[in-house]
Image (tube, rainbow, N blue to C red; front, side):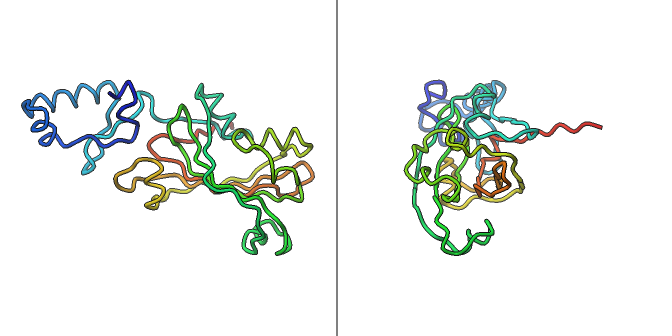
Length: 220
């Protein structure tokens, strides 16, 4: 059932006693089965949460040494990227305008997307784009890489500034990841600039901590 995806990544398995009763086998048999699945890295023990389904190679480790889109990161890691758009609005927002250093009347594209790697939900992303930099983005197909769309439309990005912190997901975010209870996640905030030093994007992405880790190479 795990191999077929019937029990998806993040699914919490029944307690040993409950599964023993449901299947009519001894609890020792259930313990041995769970132990075998842990050794194959198909289950992970999470304290009071019990046993949770995971990928055989659950943690992705993209490097931080250059600017990449989520789509590029997944492709470089050999994963199939995809997105689901939850909300899409063209709005003015004074708080966001202040982050961009723009007038309060500036129009932004606001996107909320769920980002997947091999159909596993890895991140919930809330992003804002300054439409003065790329007006056509308001009507563009945003299911793929927005960075590629910007580059194709004359707004290649030059650099970004990222901050990463540990946080706990909300109830809505737990539902996205299939968590029965909150688990540690990574909140990544990113400000992206074009080659004229205009701020084009501000995004806050919540990544599941059990499936995503950043790798940084430092040279002397």
